[in-house]
Image (cartoon, rainbow, N blue to C red; front, side, top):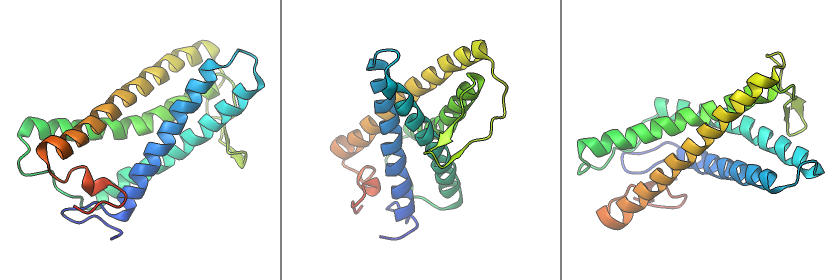
Length: 184
């Protein structure tokens, strides 16, 4: 598999970043859902939230790398039979997902630091605290963070549905070209 993408196939780097981000974001959704199911005061909450924060930092770094890679390297063209509204929708959904992959970790950082929490990156080091604690503002950012997460979830579902639509109905290579071992 080529490191870079070709006109018909995503390359190794794009696939690796795409699927790694998918797994990390999925893990964070699962982690925070698990936290919501625990009883307040449960010692596991702190561990799960810390893991959620560390994964969020990793998502931010990998999303920035993925965006750079996608901008600086050619990628496969959209199918020629896609109409203009579908092309605009596809590009809009991708752009919004990239934006949210940056905004979610940043809002998580802002929320945590405003709440007076230190963010440790997997116990290796702490992120610098750039904001003074402000618990009322942290609650506001918490609401924004949740809304951004819900929006990302909806966009991912649209993205997945569109890829299956292309594969099953349009019978083109849109899905296959991003599968880890797919050949378009």
